Amino acid sequence: MFLSEILEKMGIAFEVMDERPVESLGLVSYNDGSDVCTFAEKISFIKNVPDGISMLITKREVAEELKSKDRNYGVIATEYPRAVFFSLHNYLTKTDGYRRKNYPTIIGENCNISKMAYIADNNVTIGNNVTIEEFVSIKENTVIGDNSVIRAGTVIGGTGFEFKKNGEGTESFLVEHVGGVRIGKNVEIQHNVCLDKAIYPWDNTIVDDYSSIDNLVYIAHGVKIGKLSLVASGATIGGRCNIGDNVWIGLGAVIRNGIDLGSGSRANMGAVVTKSVGEGEAVSGNFARSHEELIAEMKRK
Image (cartoon, rainbow, N blue to C red; front, side, top):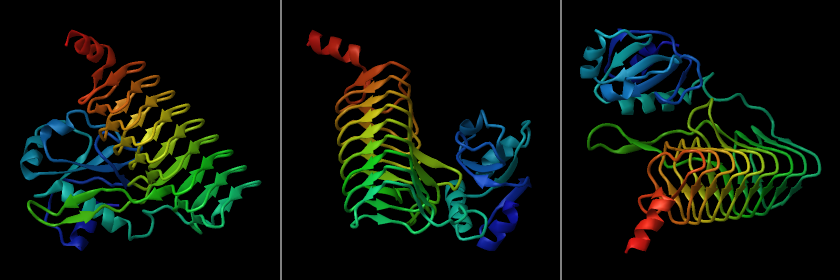
């Protein structure tokens, strides 16, 4: 598809520097490798544009700077790139070919599913030997692997808290979530967990094999949790975080959106994590830092 044709239909003011076809939308640092349209409001955000990006929506002053630079993507200039990008996404969710194709829900063998649970009629796949307790809601575009357990009150595949402003000082609008959730094999998700679906149709929020999520945890859109990881009660994981294998996230920890926790790392109880954590590292405190540094400082006091 060509964005100029769609933006004209939407009645949005824009200028085309040059244009290339687009297959999907995604953030500049986070795409599926196809011809992706993204946005950036500052030149500093687009120093290392992945090869999969074919179109950039940006401000007019940034577009002028890009005229003299070598690049492998087209550019559209507009006053509010962020608002235009997400308005475009919302518009496309109502057209054929952008959302995922529908299929009747599939439920495997030997499942124990409460009669008081809700499972969407379409686009849900549940494996064998899965337990789903009362008052669970399983929304569209969810896959649950064999031998997994979903405890009472949990919502899987809900719409997340992603709102954007139409412009400076204007009202906000909800960004449609049309991605999915993928829960691996032998996963346990305990009571009253909220696990949001991803925003983009090609993307999934993932809890991989043998991981366990405690009561009252919030996992936002597009989060990836690896194998054998444990998330304790009351933790909050912001959108698009990448959590490796065998990670521990402690009671009440808060993980800022868009950061990485490497395999074998730990975010200890109450940690407020604002920067990525390397493999095998442990962080504590508010704001979180090396656990050893925090303990040493406490001893000095």
